[in-house]
Amino acid sequence: MEYFINCNTSTLAAYNAPLDQLRASHLYRRLGFSASVDTINQAVGQNAGTLVDALVDQAINMAPLPAPTWADWTNANYPEDDDARRQLRNQQRTDFGLDYANGMLNNNLRDRLSFFWSNHFVTELDVYDCNSFLYYYINCLQRNAIGNFRTFTSEIGLTSAMLYYLDGVFNNGNNPNENYARELYELFTLGEGNGYTEEDIIETAKALTGYVERGEIGCTQVAFRADRHDPGPKTILGQTGNWGYDDVINILFQQRPNEIAEFVCRKLYEFFVHPDSKDEANNAQTIIDGMSATFLANDFELAPVLRQLFKSQHFFDDEAIGVIIKSPFDFYFNTLKETSFAYTDTTVLEMANYSRLLSQELFDPVDVAGWQRDRSWINTNFIIGRWLTIESMLEAFYQADNEQFRSLGLAISGNVGLTSNNPDEVSRLIVDFMLPKGLLDDGEYQKAYDIFRSDVEDVYYEGGNQESWTLATWPAAPFQVYLLLQYLARQPEFQLK
Image 1 (tube, rainbow, N blue to C red):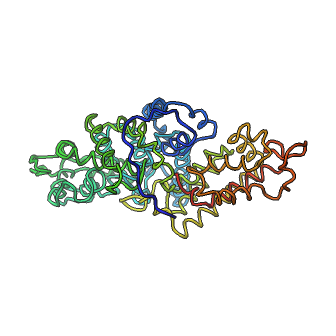
Image 2 (tube, rainbow, N blue to C red):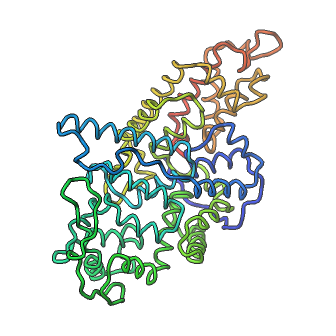
Image 3 (cartoon, helix red, strand yellow):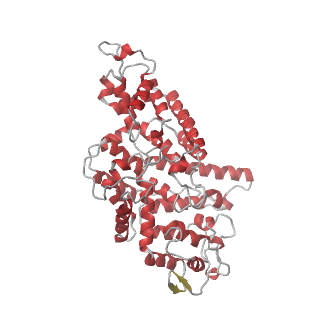
């Protein structure tokens, strides 16, 4: 697949033109896991700023997932029998994963962001292996997803999931462990080698000591033990004192605000706009500088930065549309949202499992650096896996209710689908809705038209009599839409958002 060079020279000035279908779809594909035809049609003609504000406000005001009954369970709450304990733990994880995945499907920006942050403040469930820790980690992600980044950084570091994952629970005053201190700077706030030294890491590790109280029963929330904290003086980023955990966060954000803003805003830019932010030929650095200034002016609040970015001409520029390779979750969830096909919890779990097979497992990024996204999602095995799994999904939807394929075609094509005898008109509209920038050229469109025409004789496309073809009335029309979707799902353009 061709790698898209970032040629976007638009600015952060507000995009004031009424949204067309292309940009409405773009907005929902980036701020959530896409949307239905009806939702996108409702967005067409709206002002981008008004719609963005509504989506951001919704994210801010959304409550986190309610605590499950087992949120505070320790090992003592589980059956003593190994098999029974394992089965119960696995069922709890499945149920919670389903609740979270449904949130990803339905909560637009909030859980798009909480999922993004799970790949920034990374933990791995198979390392800390505790359902209670998982719940409180996800709760922290959801509560802070569009809140204050300094508060977020402080809170996430004290979740038991993070303390176990990066060895904070083994960080004793007489034997400091440097893992979390290193990742706090390198991966979470500053970037590798940017504004800190090895000595800063050593001294920070000492300041972070003491969160080692694990209780007598496993899977107990970690607590602080003052007698395991290093009480001596430490020098961190040039500041000397008897520092503890809160001091580390305060010093970091006071002494390195510009570096933090640049690092976080670049990551947001690469995730929401374009994966290439460092080519000097484009305007990305200027955009990131502008976002950083907004971030700093608002004391590290995320919402003002995201409002600015998502309302901008740069975000809606043609060069920003269809240039990010879908992650596995994007690939399946976008398809589900855009088709509005009827689905069950089993469907959602199946999609999560397919994503796991393509190396994106819910609650389990590959390592502390997280999934690397974009081009890493496409190789020979993964692309074949995408083709086979999406074809299986579409076949299952067709077998369950083939008329929903006609309904999709009619929702996309509107009056054209109701009245036109020309299948190429109808298939063109379906192609352009399902693909962020359509197909490459006329020859590629013709291949799609031929697929959609199926084996219907040309005479029925000529119109003028009661037996003429229309999408609304032709008995085999659902199968034609099905064939077209199967064909599109294999195209390079379908892998993009």
